[in-house]
Picture 1 (cartoon, one colour):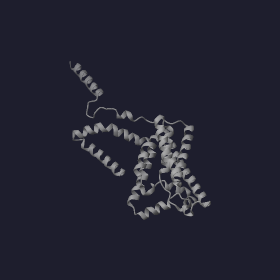
Picture 2 (spheres, rainbow, N blue to C red):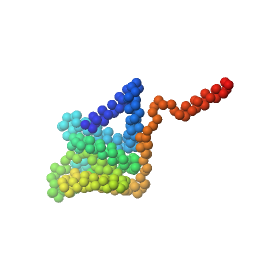
Picture 3 (cartoon, rainbow, N blue to C red):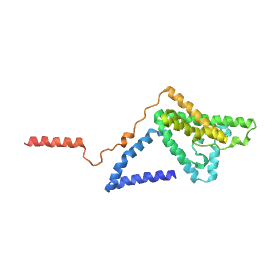
Picture 4 (cartoon, rainbow, N blue to C red):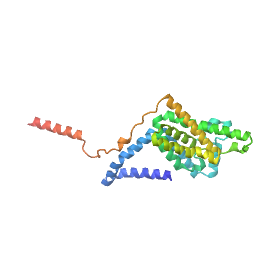
Length: 276
């Protein structure tokens, strides 16, 4: 649904811009909306890693929705960060598992919303390289710590050996690491609200459901927090480019430029003096 909405909005905007060349109401609408679309454009450009990753896992979700279910089951099974794959080819397993949205693409709108707002807000403040490292720490170390707990549970007889072959893919580890990093930089009520949301969404489920996957989210968030704090010790947060001034009213296209008009009047006056 979110993909369809975005595509419809984009197509409608460019259609409006095309009609604006010959229809005055459309031209006026474009003039009013252009500052906001420029701001949105700037927001996307300020977080290139975040929006590139959104495009990647959105594409994989479209594949999950359209491909045969058995094929998707096989792909996610082969690219899972379970104990079997981590033991044979850990780098490939960790890389591949980050490309899929768990649950056959369930919750895509939720992931896109958090990435496009919270994580994208944090990226220009940390800088793209640090934000990538924070996400990688959340995904890699969160997955490895979860696998360690999984292995210990199997060895102690508290879990079945079949747990080593489970399917564990998703983009949530990178997301929670990015959200924790964002909360670190928030201030005042925003920090309180962010910390509360993290507590409800990450910490509380560990004690309520007692599942390994929720424990993995807690591990990923903790690793992201450590990575963010270390990054801030190395260098302070950056000052992001302020795109809000682009929302201010600007001169409408077609109005004469005041500087150009003044120059033209001065030239005409000089010509008149020479003639006289």
